[in-house]
Amino acid sequence: MRYFLILILSVALNAQSTNPPKKHHHIPWGPIIRGTLHFTATAMDVQGTQRCLHELPIPGCVEANPLMPEKAWQAWTLNMSITGASTLLDFENWKNHRKFGWITPVEGITEHTVGAVTGWTK
Image 1 (cartoon, rainbow, N blue to C red):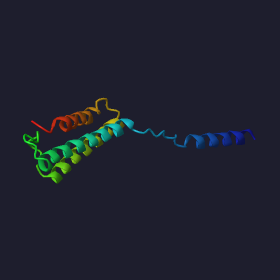
Image 2: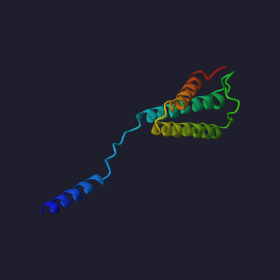
Image 3: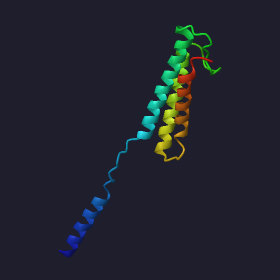
């Protein structure tokens, strides 16, 4: 009888220990907020620049980046692609617990905010 109880106890303990631990899901608020701000600043910058260049004939209105294409669809495609890559990089850095992963999106947010605010005139 004693061996039977030990057998049952060992089977119960082994069955209990083989269950995987529950994973606690954590929402990555940092990358979500930074990505949202980055996409918003990019949209404001691109739309403001395109409006200034094509819709409003404001004298002295120029694109500050000489590598940026002049057509609207090309500017949107290029800017949103780079912003998306930066957001994915930020999420990967957050997932791998890298300390300075926030630098890339914060630089993009700063750059596009300055472009949206000061990009209308020379």
